[in-house]
Length: 134
Image (cartoon, rainbow, N blue to C red; front, top):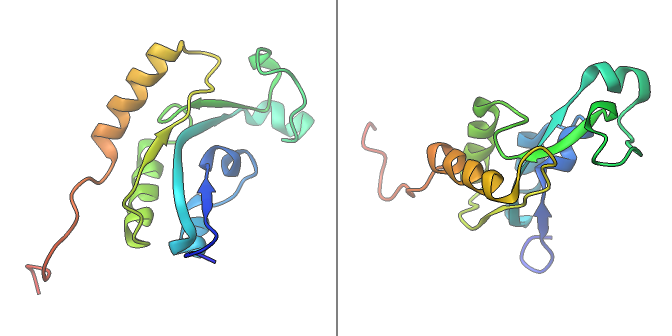
């Protein structure tokens, strides 16, 4: 696993399943070949009644336990920073693909919001050479 077969990691699906994304990133490591910058907003008051195996249409937002959201509109900014740090630790330095399936935002607004969020939070520069504080 890794060099021949890789993972297209979409954290939005891990969120509604209650998984720890940083742990998944550390487990998969070099097998991550592609990463989606896509979020999920949880609605615990609905999930507590109906569970998370959602069958309601995506345009029935008030009745759903979770919604796909533009990156930065589900989990906290701190959680995303931890995800970007874990990706860097595992050597992932490739595309962060914005996938827009947010029923609350137009594609234009969602894209602009995602770009702004990623520019503020992703790690762009690669460390080179020895650590300067050693």
